[in-house]
Amino acid sequence: MKRSEVLSIIAEQDGLLVANIGFPSRELYALHDRPENFYMLGSMGMASSIGLGLALSQDRRVYAIDGDGSILMNMGSLATIAHNAPGNYCLVIIDNGAYGSTGNQPTYTSEKTNLADIARAAGNRNVKRVGTIDALKEALRTSQDRTAVIVVETEPGNDTVPVIPLDPVIIKERFMKAVQS
Image 1 (spheres, rainbow, N blue to C red):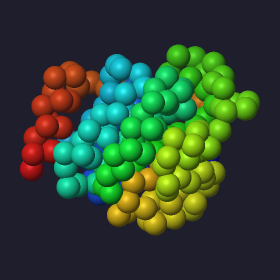
Image 2: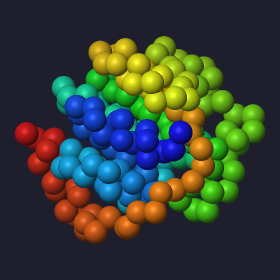
Image 3: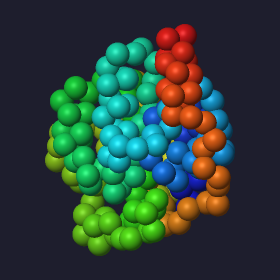
Image 4: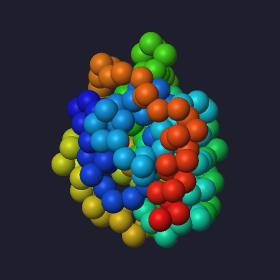
């Protein structure tokens, strides 16, 4: 399964989306741009934390899309998510075993590190590890009214997509308007 297939499924969900830096944001933009998507253009490892903050301040469902490399940089977010556990928050970790935006160097998840186990050890109660589109759809469906951490195994690699042509200020302003509506 490719990351873009996962992003396509998440883009179908009703809610606010915060997408990880680099290629995940670029792929999401190319697949399904909308004002409810916040594209990270910097701050590796912060999509999960920004998504959590949004979920704590909103009634709408919030999906944070992060990568394995980014979660490894901010593992403390998993404990913070477990502690706060807003019922409208879903963290989707796309685990391709590589730092996809910097040249596909392997991450530790390509060998021994299991992010689903780490999320559970941090206190998250609704953690799923999936490897198919059908399993992802089921995990999303069954976690609508509670905090969820879904680790999705994908193959490494990036789609050929252009850089997002929007200025970061425009991305922020249109997202803020979508959040306020």
